[in-house]
Amino acid sequence: MSDTAKIQTLEYRRDEVFTVADESESCRLAERFVAGLQPGDVVALFGDLGTGKTALVRAMAPPLGYMGFVNSPTFSLLNIYPAAKLEIYHFDFYRINIAEEALDIGFDEYVQNAGICFIEWPEKIIDLLPEKRWEIHLEVPDYVNEPTGRSIRIRKFAP
Image (cartoon, one colour):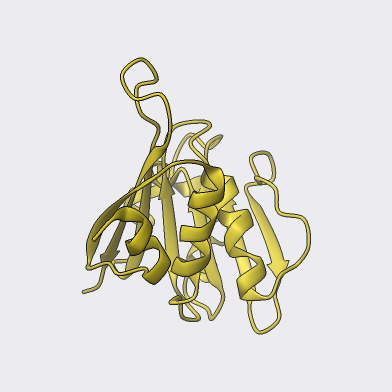
């Protein structure tokens, strides 16, 4: 099955890699992915600067019922978006130095409630992530050898 067909039907197993051509295709994948999320799910977004982590959260917010502005909480560490049936917790841990800083803002409480958590830079708090979670790994290709697109790996962890 082609990547485009996989994105249209979002057929993936516990570990699937998609190759997308551009941001709009990344957003379509995000919209399909979020349709399968349940209250209390945690989504960890891995990727270098500029790979599209915030763009994916921006694409996933409307299907969850939030129509407002979505931006990266780089300086505030957390943005809360009141969606139709639940709250969206958008974390960005780029600026923290130790994982305990996440606990200082109540991270452990947010991941245990009925909202949806999106976490940028989760590698900074890897030991605090719940065992049951989704991981999305974004990778931009080497522009010399592969001038367009990006790789999006979706993994599900369930104890």
